[in-house]
Length: 140
Image 1 (tube, rainbow, N blue to C red):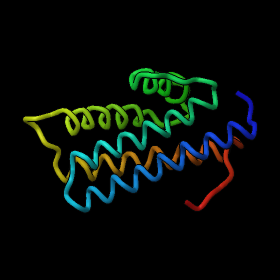
Image 2 (image 1 turned 90 degrees about the horizontal axis):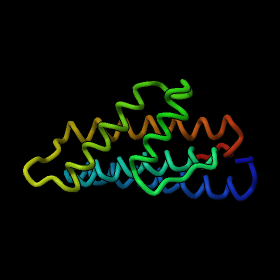
Image 3 (image 1 turned 45 degrees about the vertical axis):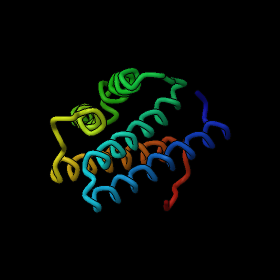
């Protein structure tokens, strides 16, 4: 997909949503809502993955499609570090526990690590989008 005004507009919206969702994850963490915090951290990353895939004209309706395409297009091609694959898998797994688990709860340490991973991934994706000319540098 070419770098055009409409794409830039969409990417700005999606990255802003990702960053806002990460802020909410941190707020939930501070209020000791670890399950919900992890869920929001995962969705923050999910939004950023959707944004970067949009630069290739890719869009998926399933979470597995988004994660798989990101791994194929960006991790396997060494654009992002291999540990991002493990981070996204952990975020997805923990989000499943946080949203659907009844017998298991996520701890403060789990949530803290997931938020740190989410922050790392989102920051790297935003820097990539800026470096590649899809976004302008912003302070939000």
